[in-house]
Image (cartoon, rainbow, N blue to C red; front, top):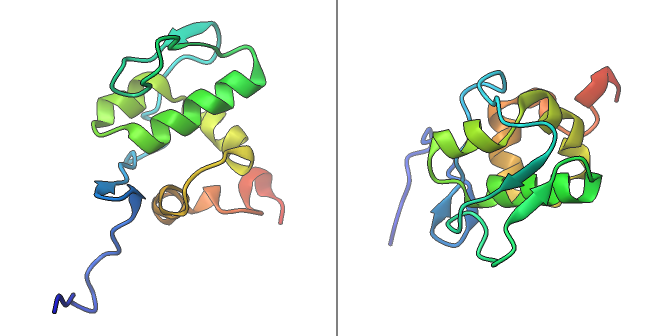
Length: 118
């Protein structure tokens, strides 16, 4: 029967067998804020992989996919923008594990605290 140490860090999953990758700082996320971005097939398995970041629904959709599928920090850095992530965070539809992992590392993302209000 598997056991875990009581002080072991929680391991959050984006989906079964896929640990969540979280950036060390929001400041290192320097991805684009506007224009058309084409995600690599590894991050978005659709033949139409271009996202128009000037359309709010497409911007959120791209962020949701990158947050779920990224396995390398450079993917987070290249496609996400820190201030934009903070702004979008309350509206993003994310698996519980992804949300929990990012909020554990970046407490300012927790519901009710983004923007300085509760």
